[in-house]
Image (cartoon, rainbow over all chains, first blue to last red; front, side, top):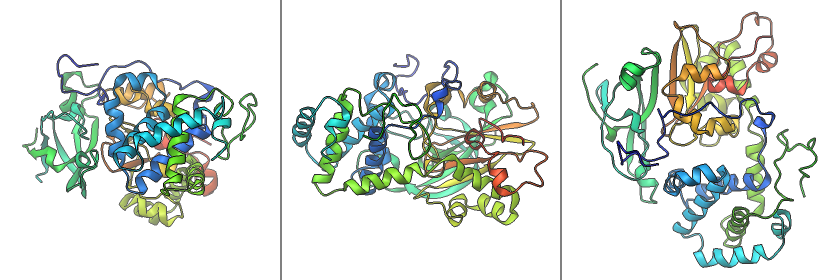
Length: 120
Length: 90
Length: 213
């Protein structure tokens, strides 16, 4: 949300804002592990950065530019894969059309993540 | 850098690592950390210049004024030198 | 298929239940993950083995690593000094693979209570402690900790005397932080391993205290 008192303030710079109680402290799932696809996203970030295609600040820059709506509506690793992908395209790892073809092929493989990722 | 510093009250758009709640606030350098590639360059895939980085300690009274939960509690943050200017003790 | 989400007893290698994923409908973002991964492999940028290895490396990073560091600092004065001096070097010397992590250890005493936050994103000493809990990444924790750390602590069940100064650390740049919690009383005869069992994840973020035996 645009801060009416300071339009230069960006949504992610939230230190000092008022907010509700700290969430999830009592839920039994608080110590959950991540699913395989989320762990793969995490690994792609580390590897993409280690190979010099982008930096953690590039990751953050795209996450910030995605805006507050994405922060509220997408999960953590959904935002990450969106940002990693944009950084990799900007870094020349592959092209948008490579991605479009690949995503279409994957969607045709099956209905579930397990089916669609089984060829890799 | 001097011992007491003020965070420059600049408001550039784009990716920066200086939180807005500290801009314009005066603190003291807790320790200096050496030089690190400037995240403002790295974020855009540009060659990054090395910038000195400091840990700066602020009192909650300095940051939040009369609203501080406990004025003597403190906050430390890492601030790049190009965001700092010399200041007198508060 | 590594798991079945109806089977709550099935644990991942790091000892926690997996979240549902493989057998739910393929989402747009999962499709993108598969595509990015396969493209990077096809372009020769990485391999499936490298990705699997990276996941294994992250799974091996858990709060128990930090707990061992803290327990040693409580019992070994030379290590304690080394940890305060250069926490990255001291943890590497203990044999932990922390990658490029630049770590600073801050210590709780009767007079000082340290607490870690990242207001701008969710920086966390992940290469030592593993991935951060969800609350650490929440808007509420990121927003409120720098303004009202004591009321945040109260929600974690921690109440400090007014005479204890709270020292909040906002991880704004290249450093990551671990809190050395105060050693509980009546632990003089405990071994390092017994002591490590008292060191919780939250106590190393500063939102908790070490457990009492």
